[in-house]
Length: 335
Image 1: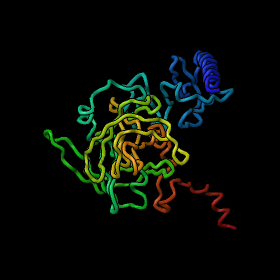
Image 2: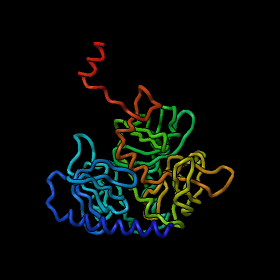
Image 3: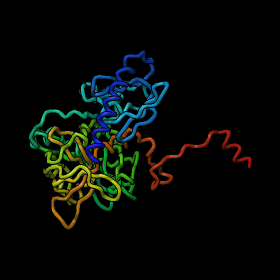
């Protein structure tokens, strides 16, 4: 059955690629979004929604559901005023990454492999320690403006947060503490939180590139940077044990990399220095049994962060409800 399923999927992809090629040859609207495929074809239309594993596109006379695994790059026609183009990614042109208007840097095509020691020197400053009155965890910057990812359980029930950043200075790391930290968005179902440092005098921050957990193979080497048991700047390494470990209805990356309390919210890197997961738990009665949230879920969370906006009116609710139109609200008052 597995062989048949794979064969049928391959046949579908071939048919889909042919259809995409025809669509690419047709005239495109100036305001259309463009999805470039890995087979050099492209699809032009309006993106209706973006999911973790697929993108839904209206091409005028029909709607296509395009698997993420077939997409090389997404070029949007524009963004809502004040909203960054967070979903623009590239596997062929790294020069597009981190450009003006983008919320985070992402590249699904891994860069050159390096040794862990070199990578830690390059990207170590992007990893931070997140503290609250009851404990601590780890996190990492996704852009230079002070936006960082951590686990929801690191900040759950807390609003007084501090972030400790470590900067290279003459070969040594200097610690800087920021106390003006704001919760931007939370997704307690995937154990993710987006924070922002609001200190007025805060400089630009070093940040990481988000990679692809889909491109990982079992046995690939990975490493983590975090603060296990409060021991900041701890580096541990291991391999990807499995990519699809099911825990309470969710799929996690399982790794032999040592993960302990305090690592929560920290990055799991591949040997290209790209984040492939967010470490969030371990099996306490065993060794080398750590787990990380796949980075694809992190991208989805960031792309749709407005839907998970944190509300001080109801801090336990990760969703924001807009006020009703004025006419509807007036009718409700009249009743």
